[in-house]
Length: 144
Image (cartoon, rainbow, N blue to C red; front, side, top):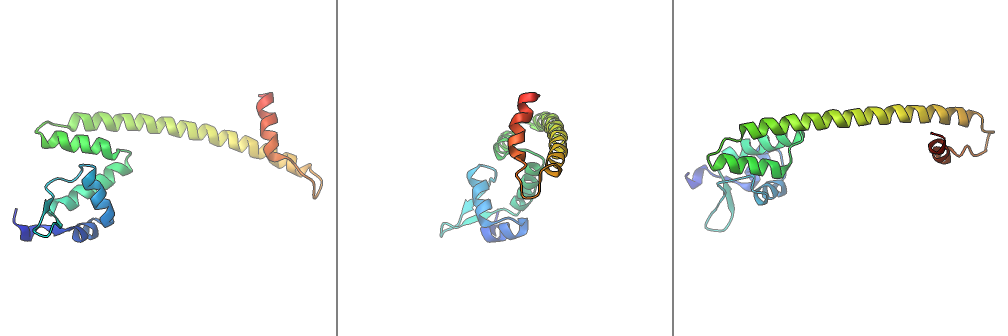
């Protein structure tokens, strides 16, 4: 790769819509390969690094961690196929997401019940009086 084809870190950051610090961080996390230093010690990146950063951003939005991605990229770079690993990880993330959604739906139902109880309690409280709404959570738990 010719040095003239390489991008400065600021160019990589601008083209991939991340900060220079993010590019440096991704490099430290072993997510970016083929980084070279010029005679002045400045980082130079192949143009493909922009696409790699976009892949990283999309994958993390789906729940992949940077460490997972680093292992996947290392596996690929060593000539091993990571596709099965990626697919399995995606399936696990979907199950985890479904579990979190179920937990959030349960929390929402509980909060709706609490709000209904609070509204009733608040309406029965004389003007200027304390309804002790938060304290009612402890009493609610004791009677459940």
